[in-house]
Amino acid sequence: MAKRQVTTAVSALVLTILTLTGCTSTVGGRAVSIYEDPFQVAGLPTTSGPSGPRTGVPDSGLTAVGATGDEYDKLALNAIDDIQSYWQSEYSKDFHGTFAPVPKFYSWDAKQTQDGQFCQQTTLHLVNAAYCRLDNSIGWDRGVLLPTMTKAFGKMSVVMVLAHEYGHAVQTMAELVTGRTPVIVKEQQADCFAGAFMRHVAEGAAQHFTINTADGLNKVLAATVAIRDADTSDPDSVHGSAFERVTAVQIGFTDGPKGCAAIDMNDITHRRNNLPQSYGSDSDHGELSVSQHNLVELSKAMSSIMPVSTEPAYDFRGAKLGCPDATDTEPVTYCPATNTIGTDVAALAARAKANTDDQADFPTHIGGDYNAYIVFISRYTLAVQNNLHQQLSGAKTGLRASCLSGVITAKLASPTRTVANGDIALSPGDLDKAVSGLLTDGLAASDIAGNTVPSGFSRVDAFRAGVLGNQQTCESRYE
Image (tube, rainbow, N blue to C red; front, side, top):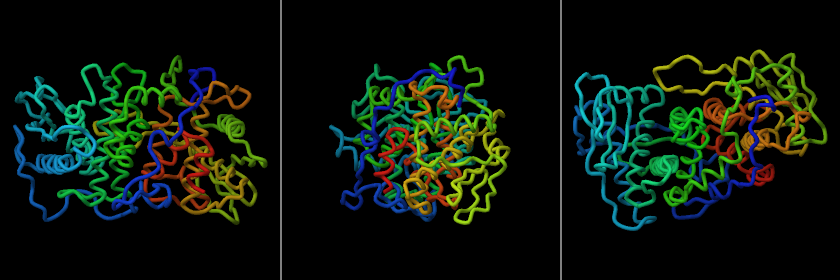
């Protein structure tokens, strides 16, 4: 977050969530609302079973140039086999022409000293996985990248990455992109195609892999968040922010390949225009200390953005309120009986600690100030629900809190707000911090007892609905 003086003016929100995700999906050939059950994930049941390679299934017969047959090559080739089988079945449903499998694969070890070639570049120290349009091939680093991703997010994150790379082959085959297509469009479409394939796996239709829609899908999304553009104003940023990448994956998971084909620069620009894209002269790069003063400023902003007839009181002496009709949810608690929000400022500030250390591995959690501020905002949204005499416990309460927090978050970027209504504003990267927190502990999507749905996908989807919609979006979704 940032002080109002350093915030870049952005246009008012005009895009509704329905234009991005759709509101129906197909389960067993039947069109169903993906919002009819808060315990479902885009129409699928929330499951907590295994995630990863299936046991007792023969390895794929596919081969790769340079492969040694180690566990990571087997993992990659089994993933490619399932991905190709999916597209063999699905391609003709949405695209013209005949599906042609990618003909060649490459494997290398970025730790080795010997030099190899992939896509006309050396594989020496090449920690990457990629699709090469020059010869219609896919390659991966089995020595550093795949083990690192597996360690951080599990084996399904490797499957996700390869589904993304295969998505590039599909968009090329379907002539969805050309040499003049912006790279960000190509990357967002590939993320979306990967999401479509992950739904196929979640439905139990993949030969070599399975994934549950709770922690399994959460980890896959967390991997997408980790490989994000930390600064979208950087000219080298081509994959999109974490918020944008997760949006693309969720479009694919919910709407399938047809939804992915609809992603173009107009779509991306339309979404981006609503939110800050540059840190401008902010030397702190959007990091604002969590203090009582700044929380008071944020409370003013929340009150102006989403006013209620009975404003909650704020107690900054701690979050242990001993509330008779709620559970303490440290570091911030909302007590309906007294209409009070209690905050342990020091504990909330600790939650805001940024990931500043250099890491050889992918960060499993994006730290920063908005990890804290979004929790504070979510407790205010419980007060909003209390004012509206809505249920304050249960799955819909938590998801409604996440959604309403998204509405407030987006409005913090509005240029029509004045300093008098809270000297605090949204910064680039704040959405990514919120998404990361929603995927990890989901406290910002919890009810007055701190309970939330097990699906990070659903928690993030609710937040995104609010960011791209309005208060009515949240009310109608989780009535």
